[in-house]
Length: 325
Ligand code: GLU
Image 1 (cartoon, helix red, strand yellow):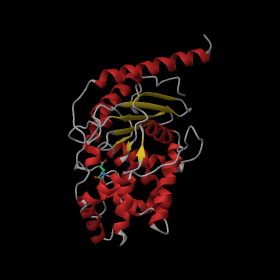
Image 2 (image 1 turned 60 degrees about the vertical axis):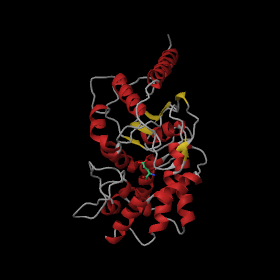
Image 3 (image 1 turned 90 degrees about the horizontal axis):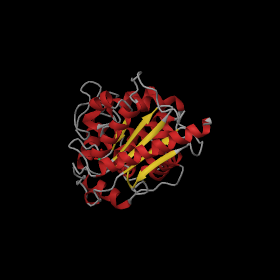
Image 4 (image 1 turned 45 degrees about the vertical axis):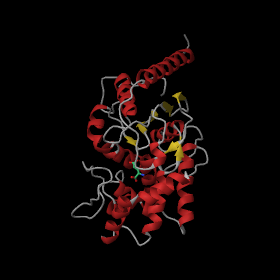
């Protein structure tokens, strides 16, 4: 067999593996969908998709990968990257820490001494991060954010207006956090505008295919493997992946790091992205959530992928997938 044929065989057995994984967990009905706003509560709980994009520009997909949903907290990863580009690492560190909390993602809490939110993956830290996005008007800031998402996905991005409106009407905890940070001078007076931008970023529409491509862009030093365009400055990839690794999976972040061992972020609409540096981006979508707000099937799929292919970053006993590199 030629090397080309070898690669094709490996790729098709990987696709079959994903299809089997999808069938295995499709029947798992544990968990419940997010219900804090009606738009999320009415989602079909059976939706389920797995996509993997490699840094070489190959994509493997199974299930409902065209289904659109709001990105929710997964947006925090990418907005953090934009804020790093806008202000640099040192300044950002004065405004948002990089410490896991062990508290709920929407806890109204700041670091006692520095008054910073703990990290950019919890709501307080994400709101502070969003408030730093540069632009001369609210419209310009939103457009810069949508352009940034577009660099990761390779296509136009839009906000779901009804989810945005619901988030905005019901987001009292987020508003309380913003006021607390305003009190301590951690965010500026444009509090309502920053909150609107935060609610808009949570309401950006993506599908599972997009998640995989976005994750693959992070795996590929910030360059979208399909468009070949730079989505984020490569010097910030390690900052982004570090906070994903330590803080990305709600209060499961430690166990996730231990068991799965890949930087990841999940959101309440049921998406998960996971980044295997220099190899691939994983996207999973399934709206049934566990009590910590992670997708039940999403966690299972990533655990199994990691074990099967030795993707844990600190696993040196395993040869990583050879057809991706
Ligand atoms: N829009 C949600 C909030 O701000 C995001 C929650 C999430 O996905 O973690 O509460």
